[in-house]
Image (cartoon, rainbow over all chains, first blue to last red):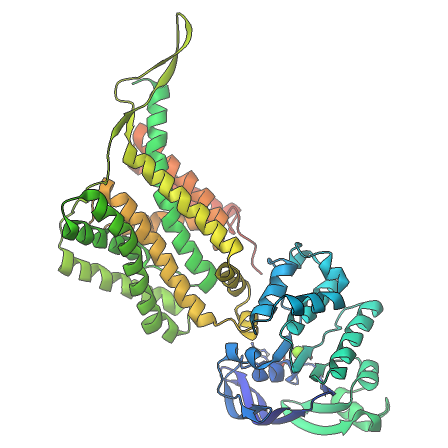
Length: 231
Length: 308
Ligand SMILES: Nc1ncnc2c1ncn2[C@@H]1O[C@H](COP(=O)(O)OP(=O)(O)OP(=O)(O)O)[C@@H](O)[C@H]1O
Ligand SMILES: [Mg+2]
């Protein structure tokens, strides 16, 4: 589905990713796991075309999207939930949703379906995004990405700083998307969540891709976890 | 003239200046807000609008109204085209770097100014107003029979000046609606708030920048067409509106459109009123002082947001 091969990327002169490989399959949750600063966010930005690549290729369903301008990437069906949510803070809930719909020309049916998944948002359509609670903001960031009707969903620490009921809602959303055959790349720090939600785990260390394992082969005491995240 | 009527007259003069300034400063503020580019050449797009207006009006000759209406449509389009070319050829190649674009737009300023000097010449040239009826204004006075209206000598304005105020107000309202209601308005606001996330949601940011730069220049040119029947076109006429626009944008808050309009009214009106009662120099001194006070006590401007 989504495949990175030999990707190098960074910020200006600072190289962060080296010869990076990753593959996410349709209908699975692939967890990208590594320490703070390992390059997880950078990987997702590289997929979105937001960083210039110094090498390698990104392919989506066999089509090479490496050279695509950044604004064309979401049109191919990649939905992005950035770290820290990155809502359009001064726009209303409704306008944030509208931006998500615009990306692929989706209409009312999509909007209704997405809002149905997050009823709290439908009650706050005219409220500015910056005035939402943390949990509501995360719902909106997720809803905005789902408005693309994505076939690939990139989620960067979507449960950071949320209370358990919100975490549960995000989790159910991810499971629903997986059931619909969406390929999901999830960056998640809480090991317990990684172990119970994901299908496979890809480790990342200092910008290098490391082992990729089935989650069923991992336990909380696995040496891989100790080696790459120190728990 | 007595104080009351004199003040009314000064206020009207100030309102004309404020109206034109609001349009010009709006263009500067829009470009800075969305693109983070300080467009030092903004005044030259204003000048370009006036010069094009003169060419259009003198080409179409006979009927001032036809020439003026044509100029009102053609000059902003010309300015927008030149601005979009400058965006493509210069700003885009600098990746909209905030510092490099300041230097680059200074260069654009001189190129435009010298081109105008060569093509248009050093003279100031008038454009005839489409209509210019003198309108005497009434004033009230306590007479023997209570309140009475009378027409003080010298208290008058022209239909054209009233038209300038109305046209500018219409454009400002139209622009506010365009920004808050239209699809492209939404795209501009999203791009202003978070360029990277806008890209991640399919907004072609560079195309938006190009259009915004064109739109900013078109606003300045439109303002200039409005003023040119009152002030004449001249190749150096861009300096004052640039300075005043900067003052307005700083006082109003960088990137805040509402702040820009409020500050333009404040500066434009007080500039007009102080110029009439005291002197234009004192008006500029006070405006500059106000900028200094704002920078010290409220650096984000009246309506600006504190930046981290
Ligand atoms: N804009 C930037 N400019 C320069 N270096 C950056 C920039 N953003 C991130 N980096 C560097 O790139 C490296 C990887 O950062 P990245 O954000 O991808 O890490 P991460 O794995 O997502 O970490 P975290 O778990 O803290 O979110 C870090 O060393 C960071 O300092
Ligand atoms: Mg990160």
